[in-house]
Length: 265
Image (cartoon, rainbow, N blue to C red; front, side, top):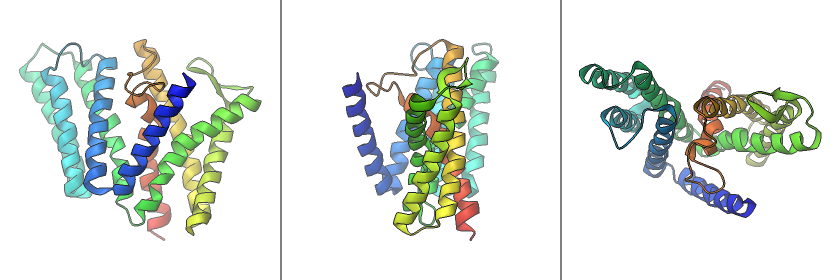
């Protein structure tokens, strides 16, 4: 299992490196594909997808495609419009097929669109900022870096449970280690690329805190739905949602913190 997890993790990192370094259309189309797969996994878990492709599920996917089209055209001008139109489309399906779908299914379909597609798009939006080719890596320092540091510290000295019911293996000591580790990674990265060290460290520390919320939120959904993993696409890791749960929350935070703390200097 460890070998499988390691190999699939290496492949995942290589794909992330190539697509993020490429940026542009390559990154946009990659994120759209990842979003659609992640939405499918979440729709399976939430009961939106049951058997075959139905109209409500298709409306959610069309909303994601519409949203990424507006990200390409201009997020600031058209992003919110796409989100609202996607909601209208879902409600259109709901009312004109009534009573085929429950209100909870419609809300889950819209939640999946925002939670996966919209949140994940901030990787591309961060990449498109000034010096975005440097800033975008902070997203992964905060999520995957924090997760690794938190695990190591938790194994070594973790004693006090952070969320004993939801995630018994996570400790307060591990959480502190994860935040400190992410801040250290951000500071070291800033020193290497000659960027503002304090700002990068602060961004990574805040992002690390938020990444834990994303991780725990994904765990809470899985526990509520009685599943262990969202999928089996990535051997040893589960599905897209299992690997990107913290990234979904970290990406928007890094985008806005980068604008507030660095772009406006």
